[in-house]
Image (spheres, one colour):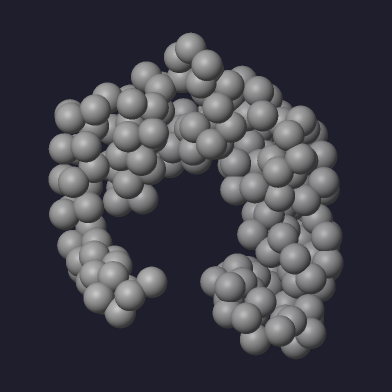
Length: 197
């Protein structure tokens, strides 16, 4: 790749970081020019990332036609968008369409599916899903969410044990792993303090 091309790519990337609305406008123009599945989903992803969740949902839902009715990416993104708009009951049938795909097991959609099960009163199923995602030295977000479920269901000792495991694992993570999980580790420490206080 030429230096000019690299600079152009870098500048366009910087522009979209500094002005995410500019990127959305470009994607909206692309969709107006050519209403394809890819253009529709690219714009929906940008809407979801920038907090325009209802607009994202409209595009995702309208994309699920023809050969794309079972598109894994769109269904996963819909699970996340539905959770953000508190449409918990809508999550369950969508997540079940992609449940058996191997990548679902370690996805954000799986975490939201488990949380939606709890929100709709199916605590036993929610717990089973969280247990499937519970593995040492990884999956810090679902483990943190599971600890919160344990607290909400009055099982504070189990929650304390899980949070203690999580926080003690931090010392054994690589610097990159620690950085990428720092938010969940900090939240786990905070919750642990509340439980011990």
